[in-house]
Length: 169
Image 1 (spheres, rainbow, N blue to C red):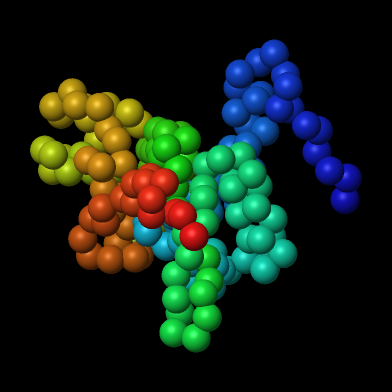
Image 2 (tube, helix red, strand yellow; image 1 turned 135 degrees about the vertical axis):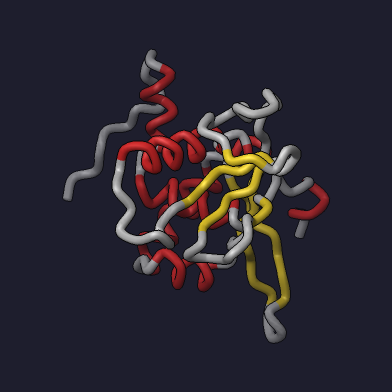
């Protein structure tokens, strides 16, 4: 299969953004990290993805500066988990927009198959990717939850960007 074109130097900002965020696996990997699921094996299990696909997407997200690696001890050896950078956290409205659009326009195969964007500060579900429609506050990873009944009965607080101190080896 031929590799797609490199759009990183295009004059269109949408094309440059799609160069990084335009792959479905990339968006789903970011979803997992926002859910706090940044370990390779946990992501692989949740996404039901081949090692090679996940490895490639994670490497691309690290190279693009959206994720960074943070060491952790799994009880036998030091491994790495992936955490958001500030640049990665800034992708939240993109993921929110895809989710909200899908909820509005695509049928869910079951009642459990919904994902809602919740503004934690006022506790309301919103249909805007970047602003709460109820109170007008800007949505950020620190004040937004996602509610996926397929994952948990309650909304999940989103992961935020790791501080440089947290990612130092």
